[in-house]
Length: 484
Image (cartoon, rainbow, N blue to C red; front, side, top):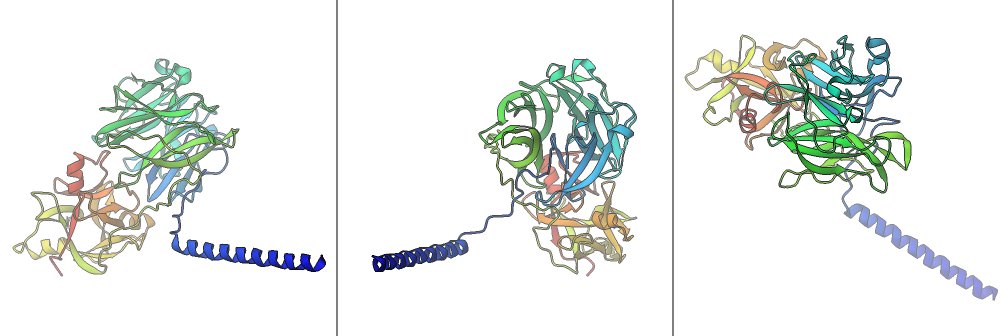
């Protein structure tokens, strides 16, 4: 019996080792033959109890602004890739910095315009605005509520701002304590005062947390429904042909499932120059209703332009850096930048009296014009993966943007100059040539308009015109230099 047991034990050990070896070899084979998954953000993307996120792109980074749960202090969070987020500190401390409110600091939003950043927030059930020097502050409160408590019978919470193609800015706010009514205000150009009367234009099933997006000429008004406190919270949306409505109800796009509860109070993000969209929102996890977590997932549209039901994940979205070139240009050579706009393709970027223009250049043009229309393509001053354009006849001067216009300016050694003078190359927005997006405002592209050269976005004060003409005017050919 002992001999038999010994033989049986040896056989078991042999087959066990054989099994482990086969599994190991199989694992090695599959690990080498199967493609590695892309790095992803994971969910949640922010630590701790965070809610009501707004998401924007400023200065070459993604920014998230959640509610002020740190003793009514609003924080800014930044990322260069959607995956790794940094707490940039306090944007606004409602207690000592706001004279008209002390508590209930909720649901902010940030907008860039006029060379400043405008921080909209709710505090003590009123809507305020502070003016900031950068996306992370410092911010100075305007000194009085922009929207008083209960104005027009609507609750004054959850502000968000949308700037349309014609440059008109709109403020949206509202909540369930105001009878579920949504307010719309036109903002003046100063961004700290309203233009005209309050407009009540409430979509179906509205509770709070409005966000307005524009895609292919359609306005998408999305908002939260239900109670933020439990699993009834969800996101629904309506569409319209105007930022003022009327709204056509479309349905629910984000709701509780078996794993994640109460998703809502969201913001949409469009990756610059693409039709790729994301949603940043908060939710409860693991049936823990004491803390909300900020998550990010993809948004998809069908062929009819309807938003498809959003799938909540634990993996989040693929890492996606900003500010990198997807088109390679030859560096340290002189080139000229030629327009591709039909009927105007014989024009080139040139500088004159320090400003960027487009001008017709041909063999009969004088030497100065040819030199002004020639630039050396060099490594980006702020990011070597992108590009900067050094003047041919003023070495040490670069094309840079300031207040949206393109200028030819001497490098001053500042980080801001280097960022303003750096542009990342991608396939032409119109389907031809190359487009150059601003390094520190990557939703803005170099484009020409009325012979002036700007950085502009197809949605905002510098958009000027239709999507088609914008894409043509923002696409360029890399041409042989006029002054080698």
